[in-house]
Image (cartoon, rainbow, N blue to C red; front, side, top):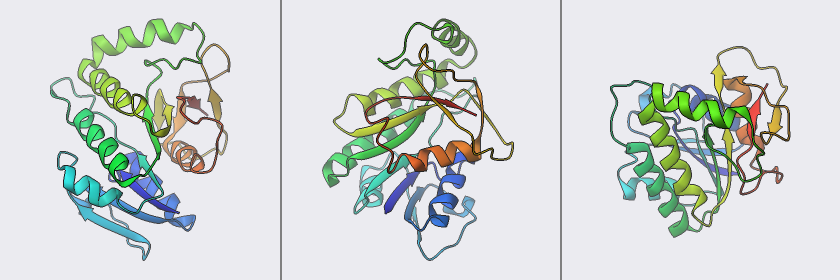
Amino acid sequence: MRVTVFGATGGIGQLVVQQLLDNGHQVTALARTPAKLTLTHPNLTLTTGRLSDPAAVRTAVAGADAVISALGPSLERSVTGTPLTEGTQNIVKAMEAEKVTRFIGLATPSLADPKDKPHWKHRVLPVMAKLMFPNALAELTGMTAAVTRSGLDYTIARITNPTDKPATGRTRSGFLGHDKIGSAMSRTDIAAFLIAQLTDTRYRRAMPAISN
């Protein structure tokens, strides 16, 4: 499968790229600084560009069967602006123009899915996020809205506490108030879950919460 990855130089993004290549996929990665992705592979195409450049984003998306976004906002309180929201809007427009429908990305349980039932995380997490990471929450809200308001065939995995622990191969996924979902999850397992959504149809146009 031909997969375009955004956020490929981040902690989760690099794992996504590596696992895709290990599984035999062809990968295109758009990065502002491609040298940060210290991978070489005959099935990997690195392109230099910014999310703010619609032409660069569309070039990266062209010919893809699916897009995986491992983009995530900075948690630094000093950071302002919404470049990832605007970048995600460019990704959505590029996918629509290139007729690429499958989008897989990341968000937070601070944002609810319609399939959720009332849960303490809906009350606590948004309040904590607004107090501690207001700009990051604004970015995640905007990024998610750009995708869910489109006609794309999306799956957005909601994560709470990514860790650098070794992969466990164990994943809990579902909806708050319905399923027993924890908080921590290794980045390696997060990447594996995102890749599994290329063929898994359970969470089409949904935002499952996931954990180990």
